[in-house]
Image 1: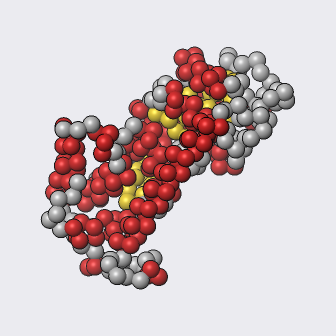
Image 2: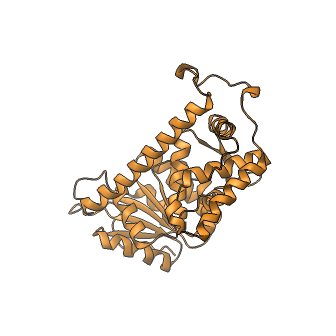
Image 3: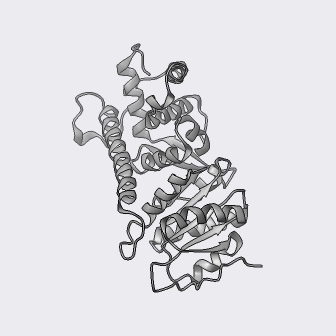
Length: 306
């Protein structure tokens, strides 16, 4: 039996459209509703199994919120595929909130960069995500401007930082003194320094040791930590799923996922489907990022790199 709330799918024209919730349980629905209610938006809810049908008749929504607390298998996969398609078409903005155990199956199906994926989010994370999702809806918006602007500023800062890293790696990937026009030309195999697996492992160990003496948050640098982890995996010929890379980033999973998405958009990371498991994707360095990392280690040599 459907658990659709008694709200018309065609909205209430007296105010902004509701936020449509697809939840895997009453507890999951309540978590989403608490965050949305705090912003002043109305809600309409539906069970995961009924969400696709509801989306097909929903005329408007301020956002589409998927809240899950367990793996719904094929039913969840179908919904995520639909969410990704709807977000890609610009029909709805979407937020997905889930526990860390579901990082891989969800990340495998979400490709559109506008979808926000929250992992075990705190209440503030939920409110900030909704502010971002509804930022484009200026008419009748009830989210306070300061919340929206603060969240947007954080994403702009993240984008700027990744752009800086990408530019630095692009310079390194062609070696010192190379003209900018040659950056996209193939680099001969002999021109890229080799790096030992033990060197990378020592650097990673040294970085982790800092947490024994100082607050780990003082040294949060997820971009560099992920670059190191992926280079280590590349040399060892290991595959790195999204969930493992989130751990290597040494920041909250939601933050790590944002970094992965932005680094992928910047051309530093590549997604590769797992040929044996359709519910998992691997992340690897792009060719340019790999060459740049190897050049970096080749130039630094024996100097301590943490």
